[in-house]
Image (cartoon, rainbow, N blue to C red; front, side):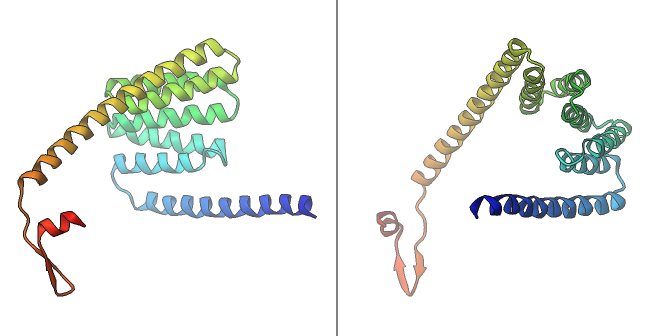
Length: 196
């Protein structure tokens, strides 16, 4: 009994997820008609391409190419890099790994040119996945390590910025005397609030 229910539940769940994706795509397509600026058109096409990523590789590539065209006409460099990455993913999903590498390289070049280290780390990891699929494990491992190194640098940088902010806020609150707060007809001083 249990074994016959499981496939039914999986089918039902996949139909539900597919319906949600279709609604999202339809919503983005209606936004596409309303957009007037090439930068916005590029971003919307890229979001549609991303939504099609696991559903339809041809539609994924079609919208990524449209996004690339709009990004080029607006000289929207980040949009171009994103489009190249999405095109690469469409080729990867179709098993066309050589084409995927070419577009990942283009995306990587663009993202490096604008110092987008987070995107660079993600693209290196995407590229690593392609090499893993082609059984070039040494290259896959090298790319994965490069991605990891970038991610660690980004995390360290973010942590240092956050720690600096925490220190500033601690000193700000330590030096201030705040007014009393009235709640439920009872007045609490800042001293009483800190004891709570």
